[in-house]
Image: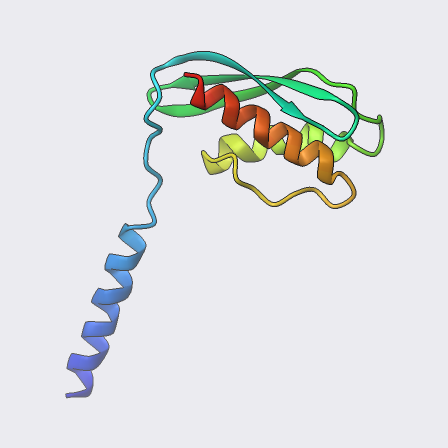
Length: 112
């Protein structure tokens, strides 16, 4: 009986993990620009999608404070590519910049 319970738990966990796999975006391949409101002004990004995956996010223009926003400007684009998602944790100390970048990526993909 104990083996049956353990086997059932293993199967349940396996099926749950299969559901956590990364799905491709429902966006045609291409390069898309989007804008978001940062702490100091508008942030413009360029998002490139290939084979249904985000392959790059580039910050084209921003007015954010140097030093304070550097971790968000450098880190959020990389995290978007890794996670294949723009709904990420904010960078401590750069909330407005983080939210602006994620909003810009969202707007770029929604406009695709």
